[in-house]
Amino acid sequence: MFKIMKSEQEVLSHLSKRTSEIMNLSKLPNLDNFYLAFLAKYEGIVITPDIDIFGYENALKENKYLAVNYSDISKTLWIIGRTGQGDEWFMNKDAGNVLFYDHNQGEYSNNEQFIDFSISFLEFLQMSFLYQDLENLLDRKRVSESEISAFIRAVDSIHLDLYELYPFKYF
Image 1 (cartoon, rainbow, N blue to C red):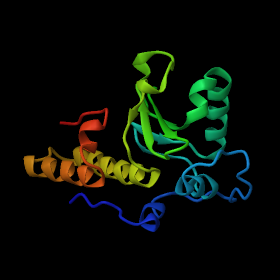
Image 2: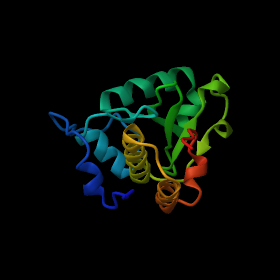
Image 3: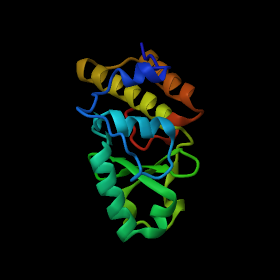
């Protein structure tokens, strides 16, 4: 029912390739290799209304704004996307893990404001496509208790308690 895309290739097959690959990534910091490959070869993507991942140009623009206005935060975090409500998705530059920022907190002041999902960018995409599957199912019908349990198990199989960390609740 809820199938995790295990391989990088399976995840990448659901993305749209750029018309021309970015060959020079010198404008980017040293980040997760899979994320860098995503920026170089693929367009940004809205997977669900809560997961809009920036492509190369938007990532540069958003992170330039972050560096100018929140230099302390930009030293350790890289913004990778946004939600439809204005919350944001980040990557820790050193660890490569994905974090979430709730815009209701106001301006960024320190790294403790961010929820660390302790997952890589690939795992973030795997989780995102599970939520896309859930939204598609919810558009068609009311889900059963067994489907809810299957969904939670699938998300938590990516990382322990990932379902609980996810900031938007469906059930």
